[in-house]
Image (cartoon, rainbow, N blue to C red; front, side, top):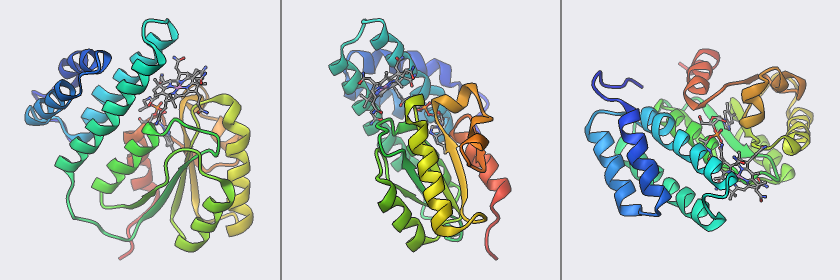
Length: 224
Ligand code: B12
C-alpha cells in the first residue's frame, strides 16, 4: 500500500466531493480514474478521498445543506466508484490461508467503512467474506461455525447499536469458544474511545481500514 511520491489524495478530494455533492456520477468516476492514473493506490483513494468526502456529506446533511435524497445519491455514487477503483486494483493473487468474515451489527446500516477493510485485505491476499449491513446474529454465528475464519470483523457506526455488537460477540464466543476466531470491532464509537472494544468483549480494534490491515497482518500469520 504505497503511494507514489507525487500523488496527493487531497488534490482529488475536493474535486470528488464537488462531483458527489452535485450528483454527477460520470464526473466522480473520471476523478477517480485520474487519481489512479496519478499513482494513488486503492488505500489512498479509499482513505484520502472517499472517507473524508462521505464524512463531509454527513456534515452537510446535518446542517441541512443537503437533503436525504442528495446524501443517498452521494453514497450510492461512492459505492459504485469504490467498485470501479477496486476492479482496477484487483489481482487474482491470494494466499487463501487467512480468512475473515465481516458483518455490521444487526441494526446497523452504515456498511461502507467495513467494505473498505475487506477490499484492502483482499488485495493483501486474504480471503474475505463481506456480509454488509444489518446481519442477523443467528445467521452470522451459523456462518462463522461453517467457515471457521481466523477473524470476525464487526462494525457499528452509532452508539445505540453497541449493545447489539456486544450480543454478537457473546454469541460467537458461546458457539466457538474464547480463543478463536479473533474478534475485531470498529466504527465511529471506537474512534473516540478505543478501550470500548475490550469492554464489549472484542480482541482488538483499529481507527481505520489501513491500520486494521496492518494490525491483522501482524496478528494473523499465513499458513505455510
Ligand atoms: C452514508 C451515511 C448513511 C447511509 C449509510 C448507507 C450505507 N450503505 O452505508 C444511511 C442513509 C443508511 C444512513 C442512515 C443513518 N444515519 Co448516517 N451517515 C452516513 C455518512 C454520511 C457516511 C458514512 C460513511 O460511509 N462514512 C465513511 C466511512 C469510510 O467511514 P467510517 O464509517 O467511519 O469507517 C471507517 C472507520 O470507522 C473504520 N471502521 C468502520 N467499521 C469498522 C470495522 C472494523 C472491524 C474496523 C477495524 C474498523 C472499522 O474504518 C473505516 C474505514 O477507514 C455518515 C457521516 C460520517 N461522518 O461518516 C452519516 C452518519 C454516521 N449518520 C448519522 C445518522 C444520525 C444516521 C441515522 C440515525 C439518520 C436517521 N435519522 O435515520 C440513520 C441510522 C441508520 C442505521 N440504523 O444504521 C450520523 C451519526 C451521528 C452520531 N451522533 O452518531 C452521521 C455521523 C451523520 C452526521 N454528521 O450527523 N447514514
